[in-house]
Amino acid sequence: MGLFGLGKSNDEKCQHWINKGYDIYKKAEKKYDSELYVISAKCFNTAIHYDSESSDAWYGRGYACYAVRYDEEAIRCFNEAIKLDPELKPRIKYLSDHDEFNMQHTLKIDLNPLSSNYETAKELANQKQYESAIIFFDKVLQIRPEHLESLFGKALSLYNLERYDESVSLYLEMIKLDPHNSEARNNICFSLLAQDKLEEAIVYLDEVIEMQPTNWSQMNNKSAALGKLGRYEESIECIDAVLEANPKYVDGWHNKGKSLKELGRDEEAEQCFAKAKELEES
Image (tube, rainbow, N blue to C red):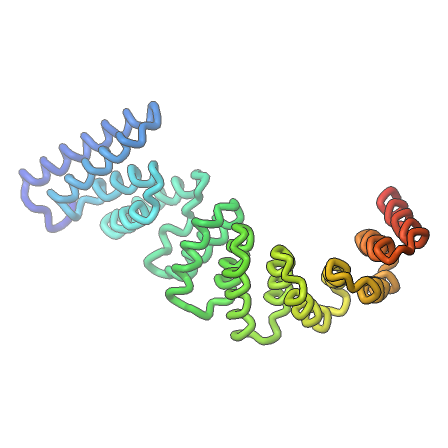
C-alpha cells in the first residue's frame, strides 16, 4: 500500500476489493463477458476509494478497463500504478507488446503526449481503424495545430473514409504551412478525382506535374480527366508526352486508345489497346 494509507481497516477493505476484482476478472476471462469486466473495474475502483495509493488497485483497474477497450482510462490507471510502483512497468510493457492494439507508447504518455498520440494514430491508421486514428491525430493537433505529419495522417484517414471535402481542407492547410508540399497537392488530386470534380482536379494536377515532371501517374490522370470532359485532343496530347518519355506505360496506352476511339479513330485506338495488351503479357 502507499506511504499515506488510510489505516489498517481501510487497508483491509482495499485488499478485499482488490481480491474481489481479480476473482470477477478471472470469471470474465473464461467466457469474455464484458459486463463482468466492467464489474471487475468497479471493484478495483472501490479499492482505490479506500486507498488511492494502492498500486495493485490502480493496476487491476487498468487491466479490467483494457480488457473492454476503455483505453484512455486504462492508460490513466497504468500510469498511476507506475508512479506508485515503478517495478510494475515491465509487466505493463509486456501486456502492451503482446496485445493486438499494441499500446507500446502508453508508458510515455505523461512524458510526451504528442509523440505517443501520434504513434498510436499511425498504428491505428495502418490497421485501417481510421475513425479511431482520427481521434488520436486530433489529440496531437490540439497540442500542435501545425503538426504536418498529423494533418497528413488525418487527411489520408478522411480520404479512406470517403470524406473527401474534409480531406481536401486539411491538405490545403498543409499547403499554407508548406507552400512547396507536392504530396499534399498530389492527394488533393485524388480526392477531387474521386468526386469527379474534374476541372478543379486538373488545376492541382498541373501544379503537381510542374513540381514533379516525371509523375507519369498524375499525367495519365490529367489525360483521363480531359477525356472525361470531352477534351480528347488535349487528352491525347497529354498522354503522348508520357508515352514519349515512358513507352512502356501500360495505362497510358489504354488511356490514349479510349480518347482515339471517342474521336472515331478506331484503327489507331485498336493499335493502342494491342500495345497495352502486349506490354501486360510481356
